[in-house]
Length: 328
Image (cartoon, rainbow, N blue to C red; front, side):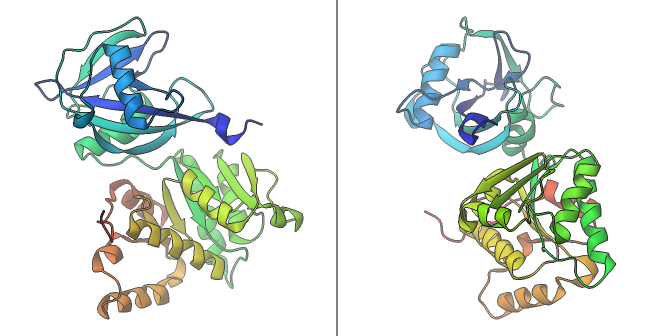
């Protein structure tokens, strides 16, 4: 099995526009997908340094370092390396010199981002950057982190909801990241997704593996040393978070992830799957925090609450992040 370092490719990319507002895309020699100018860092380079060098090498344009503005960092499937994920830091830069294709580039193409996008775009463009710069609705997340209990609760509604969530995400091509156990609702979510042909990535501690709670039939089971590593790793893999009913551990995971959103540590949607009114008491407490001046209403409004899979996914795809609590 490849190590995590081998499975992730870090790159920088640059959005350049012409006078008509079209964005520049390039198709590299020997490939089929169009992407933004950019590439992998060399030793010691910052993301911005890589962006500047790659534009010079690929399209013959010397960019002004002072003109770079970071759009964000995005994670998605790599276009040309099957089985690898891309982590891309993407910049914008004002248009200046006319680009020209070097030997590394087979074709240049200007794209009207406001028109329907062609099917030959790399995932980074189609799934992340073009929606971000045009304000178009977000696509469905690539991976959803599911928090839920190691027990099944006091009635059948919880298990059935776990089944619906797991199967519903799988049918839509959305991967699941979760705590890696085979017990309780967490096991049911995983089994339902796997039965529907979905991808399930479990992250579990060695202590829980030793306790024989690990699910051994997952797409991937990743073993880490501590609970802190487990939560951080799950958060890094996910594009959105959904909490099903659960106990103290589920609450702790939900609140930490939701708080990270407030602080700007991530800009990903967080949702409660409110099965049979399970989260109603918590929502009442959160509303009380707002009413008593301990929580800004913008963070309450940013929390997604849904009672079925279709509703949750629809709101995940249209969600926009709240303003971070403390700005730089």
